[in-house]
Image 1 (cartoon, rainbow, N blue to C red):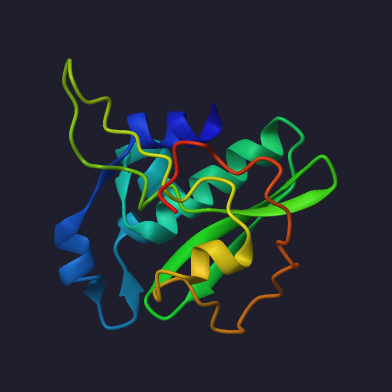
Image 2 (cartoon, helix red, strand yellow):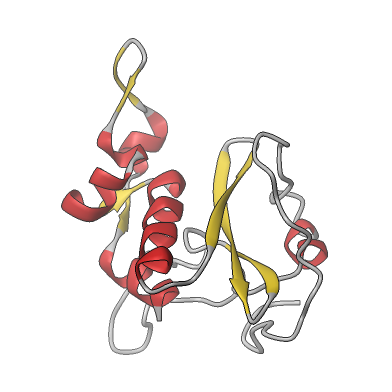
Length: 142
């Protein structure tokens, strides 16, 4: 539910992705929780922060994962860690035939998410081993 909520209540900010700074070292709100909660828009960092905050609000442990130029999450479900990328699951489209939600990056093991070549942690943050496939989405691309 949280995965879907973030996707349906946020819009990816392509302008901020191209031009991230307001001035010198001051990032635009699209990179923080303010952008996610108030502006309902942001880049991957805001998506992952929104996902993490909402998970914590309902008692689910979630952390952020940083890669080269990208951020996503790990989430603890029934004692097992999984990787989730709400940004990449947002198709950016909506309408009667397309909800705008995908599950390609939903509850993946580390091996599955790294297989695309874009989801490799940069070592900045501790990432627990995500080994389980128990809650791997049947809708995800393999």
